[in-house]
Amino acid sequence: GQQVMQIPQYQHVQEGEDFTTYCNSSTTLSNIQWYKQRPGGHPVFLIQLVKSGEVKKQKRLTFQFGEAKKNSSLHITATQTTDVGTYFCAGRPRAGTASKLTFGTGTRLQVTL
Amino acid sequence: EPEVTQTPSHQVTQMGQEVILRCVPISNHLYFYWYRQILGQKVEFLVSFYNNEISEKSEIFDDQFSVERPDGSNFTLKIRSTKLEDSAMYFCASSERTTARSSYNEQFFGPGTRLTVL
Image (cartoon, rainbow over the protein chains, first blue to last red):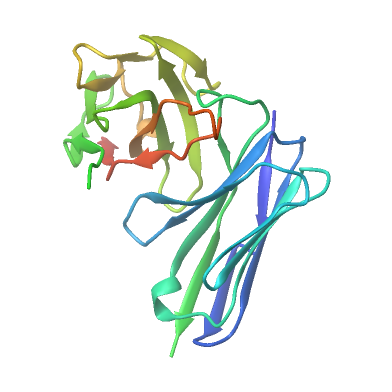
């Protein structure tokens, strides 16, 4: 079945440093979404990418979707302690709101002062 | 701001017992989902539900699992005979009707129900 892997599993940075998590799918995706889960919390939607090669920015966060639509990345510039949490990519192999969303393995980000 | 709610927040049950996890999706949403997350692991898709029927289900969602929308507001997940390995956080999510601008709407997650099977 489809697998979605993320690296690294865990990253510890000092506040102000940059952070990147990479997401790789074993199959081509129709679209990809990114979610953030704070410790003890639930996943919260960040963004979705649909087009090959798409790049989207949200303040300090930059999201990319690969040309082959099999990989994606999230880059955070100048991390803050509020960025702490686990970042999951989630991909759909097929179009449609009801189709299965496969979450990646997640990258846990720890930020210290 | 509208949100997805789930009850109970924590359910403890004995192995072999039936449990029903309840969710109230956001009121104008039409797509509903259940996910589970074993402690420290990734979020796993269980089932999606639209127009009063299952749209898609994963291999985890076997005959022990069922979903129901008994009225216009609730969405339930039933586990018929719980096993130790069913212990996990169960998240309900909902998504609004597909719009012309986007066919891939975000999912709004509830706070989860922690199920502990003893």
